Amino acid sequence: DAGITQSPRHKVTETGTPVTLRCHQTENHRYMYWYRQDPGHGLRLIHYSYGVKDTDKGEVSDGYSVSRSKTEDFLLTLESATSSQTSVYFCAISEGGARLYEQYFGPGTRLTVT
Amino acid sequence: AQKVTQAQTEISVVEKEDVTLDCVYETRDTTYYLFWYKQPPSGELVFLIRRNSFDEQNEISGRYSWNFQKSTSSFNFTITASQVVDSAVYFCALIETSGSRLTFGEGTQLTVNP
Image 1 (cartoon, rainbow over the protein chains, first blue to last red):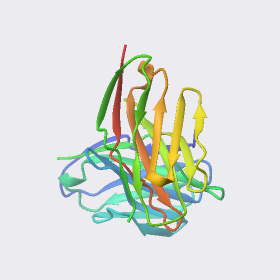
Image 2: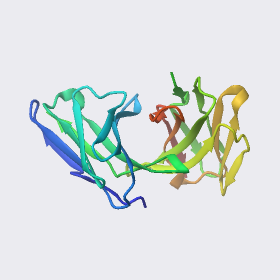
Image 3: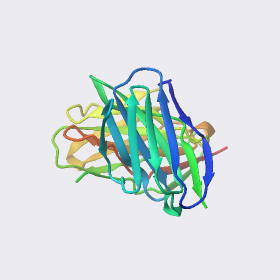
Image 4: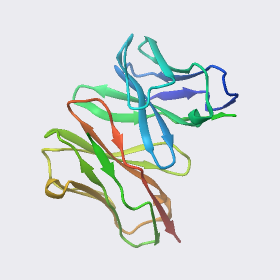
């Protein structure tokens, strides 16, 4: 158990509204990631963080922003949600060091944009 | 660019049969890691194995075994004597040590029937 929680677990929102998803970890890991999972695409990296206030873009970052003001929290924001952002969002952590490349995933957030 | 291909979209077997899930990858890096994850119907992503590019030794863990062959860029996963609880989507993934992006295949849906 990597001690990762995501909130909310389910959300339905309307097009054009802002949405923030939260990822919380209890193990003080340096690296955190946001992915989205869509049929036919597997999981794709949105943004990642390699420390407090250190973030970078992933493969599908358009329309998303992130923030990490504390080690334990990594927030994903959809500034103005669109139907194409309906997806399951997974947060992941990496311990770093010898296990830098192993990523462990949270339970996921199912987001529906109507 | 890195790429992972899981050509088998769906596989259906009868309990106690052996089944092999194929994974073919592309990368320009000489140093990389390969992974398998399991996603049961409940939706979470479960880490199964990590293999680095310098270690071609096959690995066995209970009923699970993995065959890594650099010559064919393949990292195949075999379940021996399959059980109904093995029913899940299985993802193969790759990360290059020069980057931070975990690239997933599209997944193979395995259904084990009683």
